[in-house]
Image 1 (cartoon, rainbow, N blue to C red):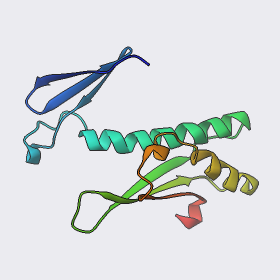
Image 2 (tube, rainbow, N blue to C red; image 1 turned 30 degrees about the vertical axis):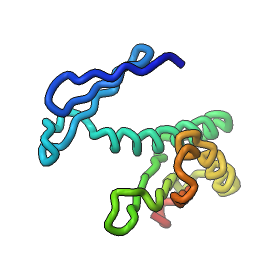
Image 3 (cartoon, rainbow, N blue to C red; image 1 turned 180 degrees about the vertical axis):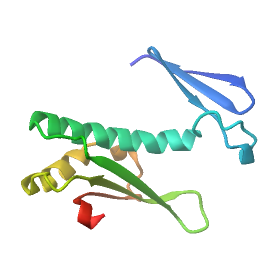
Image 4 (spheres, rainbow, N blue to C red; image 1 turned 45 degrees about the horizontal axis):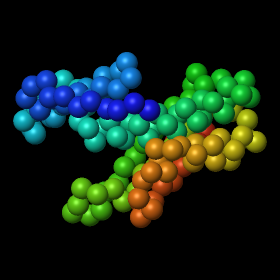
Length: 135
């Protein structure tokens, strides 16, 4: 992996360039930014979802299972009175046609997410897969 170049294009905006990509971040207006891009923390949380998502997608691709009605929802809970994560819930929502025999295996697959596995061990991670009537 090559290095990451961080630049400061103006106000509270921060760009991070790597390979052929640029990840843009900003701050909310409340925090002095222009709200032109997600805040860095939001990018961090989206990386957990994207990582779990590629594991779920790859699992389904190998088994030729449709992902068209599938989505992941991430819930983050913080320690009381602090800005530190206490728990992250990763919930994969599948449709009623998703084979029940794959519920536990796809959940286990998502647990392989390298981003999630970098989190501090004190942060509780719950990864689940649910059908529509369980949402």
